[in-house]
Length: 324
Image 1: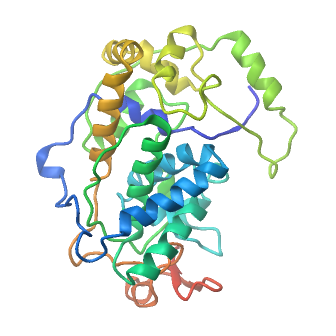
Image 2 (image 1 turned 60 degrees about the horizontal axis):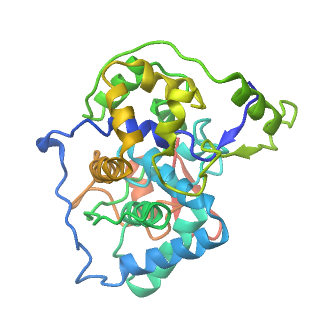
């Protein structure tokens, strides 16, 4: 099959953990309304930036959800995926993220607005979590409160991104990957794809476009700009794009959830929202750990020195990036 950068690639792998749970001991001490006193307009300002971006490009909503997913699954929800490295050695430069990951400019716009209102107060990790929530709300009409209080990490290494669940994993490998984040499930099998769907994808994604001219297409060709349960309806028709998608219906443990979510969109949205909240708790930095980045693309100057990492100046950022 021809190679494409899929704008929702990786997001639906989160669905494999919808039936799983985080042990209570693993949940961080985050708080709904964390900025009510220190920056009461923070969430509204983030939402304004997301609304403006999605109005101009509806695909950015899925991009922001995926950005949050790729942040939390690598080093925890610490905004390390946002750090820029002129040397091309940060998380965002790794193959699982580059060139398909997007929405960075939306987070930068939100951060600028929040910094203007409340300097040195709101973390980039929280802004990313708020933006993902707002994207779910705009495209799926589901709203949920986001516990906040995350702080930003100061390390971003490209090789760490290869721990993300890939599109060619079996059910067993997917489950193992979730177990590493204290998300538990089970087991295996084989997969296929509709020949007609494969032919359509090959037509949409010709193989000779070149390395630096990626062509994108939606995974869900029927409702690409809506967060709904159509993904699950497509799987039994062999319309799952990736091998890992097909694994969800080949696994005896996961298949009942696929069937239930396909039949009941309200149920799926409830589970999806719960999973997003749980995911947002993965290995967060709180209290005195981490920092409040002044620029989401660059760690603060003092932290890069204390981290002992390679320091490089990010032009115009007023800060530095620690990335090996």
